[in-house]
Length: 248
Image 1: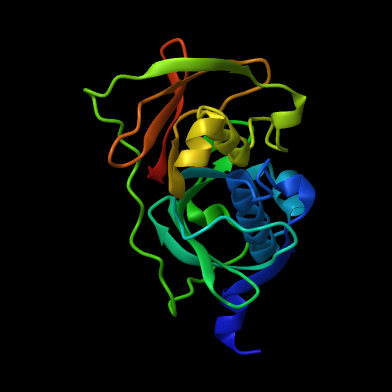
Image 2: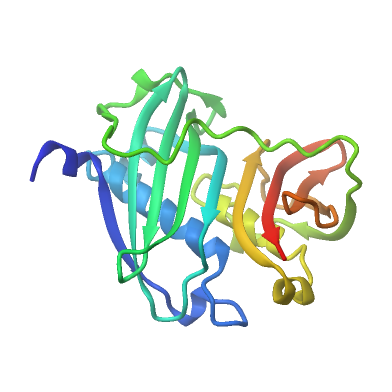
């Protein structure tokens, strides 16, 4: 195995019935789930397992994900996720992903920004806090650092429902798992919209952690040229801002 194959992690995932929606298509949150699982495996392969991270009271916090989608996977498809670190810029880490189907055709590609955090103090740590070196893979790139989501100031948002964080949404950092936010956004659309519109990507910026018991008001825009914007907030606190990239 050469050096580059150590830096590029690949992992296969089957699309099971529990991963699909009412159309037997893989959910958008499933794609983020397998991206997260592949990233965890990639870091673990360097000798930095999840158990090691938890014992050191360190964790990864995603800040922004920008995903472009060719199509959602179908039930029983075997997917191959490629992921690699692009290194850090200051305290921020960039990780890219490509997801391929069984014929090696790309379904999706994503760019993401992460921060290493102290789980107790909830503060961002310097990269030097990691006990192992994470070298960048330079043979591929999905693109530059993704921008944060910016919802146009003149765009009207309407509340569509309210969500309360419960047991089922919590991860091992004791806050709402990042893939669950995707379900919150997808639930803001009607079934008619899912029938009429084509999903071609997803862009989200996580502003604050949502913890057990907190209520999140889900607000959305009408369809714009970019898609449907979604915001999750509680009072004056904004938890996330996102854009479901949709077209007719």
